[in-house]
Image 1 (spheres, one colour):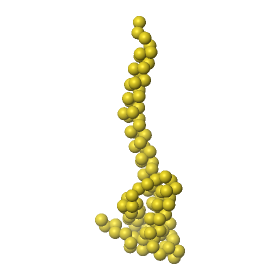
Image 2 (cartoon, helix red, strand yellow; image 1 turned 30 degrees about the vertical axis):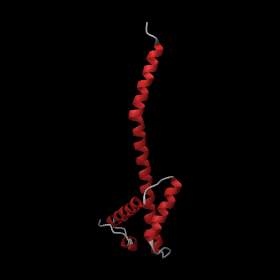
Image 3 (cartoon, helix red, strand yellow; image 1 turned 30 degrees about the horizontal axis):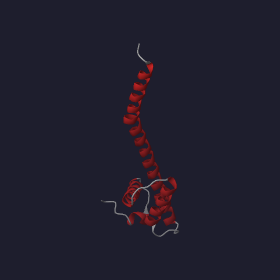
Image 4 (cartoon, helix red, strand yellow; image 1 turned 90 degrees about the vertical axis):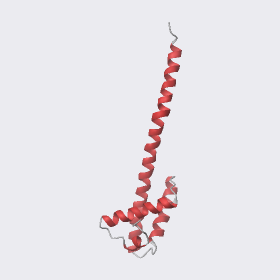
Length: 115
């Protein structure tokens, strides 16, 4: 008769291997995607706020305002992306707003969205 302990130990080993190989990378991918979506939401809000603040005359440099607000929000959310990524995301948000027909005024003037 076979000892059940050996079977249980072998089964636990197989399950641990499956979790390590499949589940952990999947969780990392999902949390990374959630963080990226949260970051893009932060950027969209910051760009919209910069536009409104600029239209009301409260802010003169809307790009600097948007970058600062994104950095503050990222810090509060525990996110980090390098300056080039932040700038590219802001440019993409500005372009998306322009493509949707929203008036971006001078915010878009300070950003080269052509490449």
